Length: 334
Length: 211
Image (tube, rainbow over all chains, first blue to last red; front, top):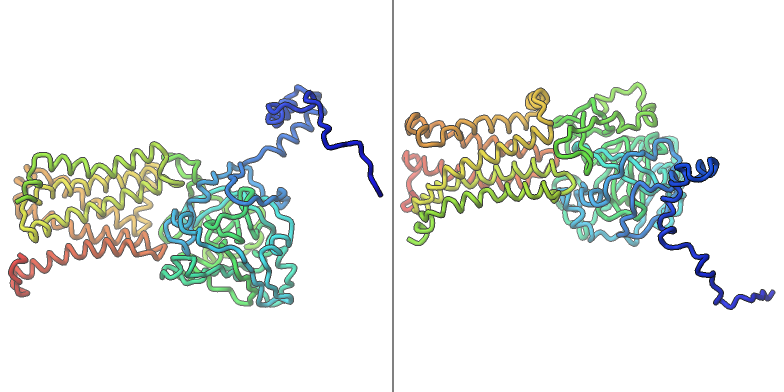
């Protein structure tokens, strides 16, 4: 069918109809202004909702490819705390494959080759599979989640991650009845990771979760942060984020997810079993043998002379994950 | 001799004094202009500790340098370098007390009792204090050279404790590369003294020219 149109492509709105740039750019302020009571009451409540929904807690840094996501509806997944500056979050990292100083990864991780990338899901599952990153990205809807991150060293950040619950992936591969733990194996490539040869840890870096922990909706398979794909130093192209455990439990640059029957030996546990337990839940009542875990310093916020803030049980996610450990002696299973 | 002339120059001491203050100035400016990275408190605590160890290496290098080079003028700088060890140790302790413990004395006392590596560091600091306090000429005269020297031998114990403190601190990361550097330098400097001592006592034969 021929669609006729009189539009020759040169019909434009009259200049008077075009919203002026200053008003366009100030539309958020206008919404807030309306919410403030300038508009009618009905309109005001609508505007208030709009203003709240639109208020972005962080700016996209504009350094890497955007990774669009919808806000997560998972309970506890959207803390309202001030988000850490991207600069701090992307230059203060522990990623020993690229050096042990926290400024090393940002300097050295540019060598990491993230394409092509595959993640192998294997072990005690009905449907083992090798996922190309592109397919993994599309496996479930990407969500934005703002999590607290507590490092075992006594500092913390607030990071807006992008990803989806690991349980989405687990459900697809159909674990067998005897799959009680999940092991996460991370990339090990001496050619691109200069410190993999060092004796600090056993490589590859391996982490693990109990099945119910891995299935918890807060356990995130993450592909991005701050609205963009992950920078290499933060574990590109895909990593784990387990917000109620110390940061080292969240493996970076994952290449294998393995379902096993026995509790896996994890990297830090192998290096110093008396200091780093398998569970490593954030717990202000169980100190590290060499320092207190009762308090923490929030990076970029707490001034030099500010008293450190109190660390919360399960990093503040007790309401969501506390029941996973009901009846467990957390001093013994630290 | 050229080297002696430089070392004996009236400006030599002020120049060294200024140079030894540079790390402090650097950290101060860095802290004020927020150039110390994401965790300035940690940076200050670690950097002041590093500089304490570096000055400890420097001051312990003075005598070997003097003897091996046969330039007595090196000895002029020993006291000043020793006091800079104490200066950076004080800054290190203050940074820890202030930035990590918010100057809460009870918390600090608990921390010292609880964490062995803090206890070791604090002990080294306590031992260093009488050495700094007896650095001026009147104290040396009052104590008498023999007793003064005996007291200041504590620096060897302090060096060992300082390395142990650093070793323990790094043990968490299994990362001993830097610790090893300091251990080798300080061990070498102490080893040189031990060899010299044994040669003097005739325990091992003296090689001409070295002492």
